[in-house]
Amino acid sequence: MAPAGCHSLGVVALRPYMGWNTYYGLGGVFNERTIMSVAHALCDRGLAYAGYRTVWLDYGWASGARDAQGELVIDDRQWPQGLAWLNDQLHAMDLLAGIYTDAGPSGCEGQGVGSLGHYQQDADRFAAWGFDAVKIDFCGGGQQRLDPRPAYRDFIHAVRNNASRRRMLVNVCNFWRPGQLGDDYPPVARSAYATHEWASPIADSWRTDTDVGFVRDVVFENVLRNLDTNACHPESAGPGHWSDPDYLAPELGMSHSEAQAQLTMWAIAAAPLVIGSDVRALSPQTVAMLSNPEVIAVDQDPLGVQGTCVRRDADGEAWVKPLVGGGSAVALLNRGSCRQRVGVTASEIGLASAGALTVRDLWTSRTTTETDALSAEVPAHSATLFCITAAARPGYGGR
Image (cartoon, rainbow, N blue to C red; front, side, top):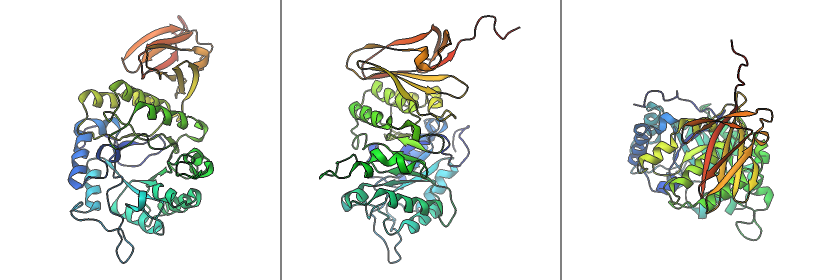
């Protein structure tokens, strides 16, 4: 049973989606028993209740082999009761199910599932199995030097028009940086840097940079790199279409403060929140951090604005995200290796005439009142997160 309060079943991309993915924590080695174990952990540890509901099978769920009819072959040793059964179990737990494929003929280096030549067939099969989300990679597609625009256009059309008429969220994962494949390929127009230009109208999310790390190996430097690239085109994102800087990666190489900073900045960026770590092995401290309801609320704010950096001082930055109701979320980020005071003015927050500010620290759960500006001592490789509103003026509006 899912914990009381889990949301009703259904894919809603009007807010950034949340969930868990196999890739960084498990690599390509998992099976039915593994996935059911993780699903129970998501519910038992309160992460599903917090919103992390989509259980996403990434690379490794199948070899990519096909039968005489072109259907993907499923290993009955890996999935003894079948993928439709698996998804029925997940749905009964009030969870959602996601699956992976590549827009090319295979995944990386000719290995794993690729759907080129089978877009409609695979979309129909994924829907018939009961999946709620599809991650369409471009590792094999990029290595084959396919043009991502027509490939994704055709594949997403197939997903949207699957035979079951099932609504499935689509994540575009063309992660290639310009020149990453050598010989100046791909050019910018075919890279992750340009995906926002064409994916925003047709996909639920799109990757904005290369992978945030490697299997069980994610470092803060790469988190900052992906944050910066993700910040380049905030105007492209909004309800129903989200910039995706890649997965959350606590306990995969970063300190707790660094992992908390990643969640803070992903929330300011209105990014999908997908845990890449094995949630069964996470410490209670990390589970509590990932489950912070006020931080998640910033990410899930209905206004759907992707926050932006409004001030830089040395290694310190202030980022602001407008919230529904007129308030703002403010993240103070310290990229450096030494503690630093980071600040922002009311004008930079967008509350120029506020005077007094009501400041809620979302990590310490403390509320204070400040005047015209906000600043804090931020430890190295850390970020603080605040909700800021204009304080009520004495004697105004009351009786």
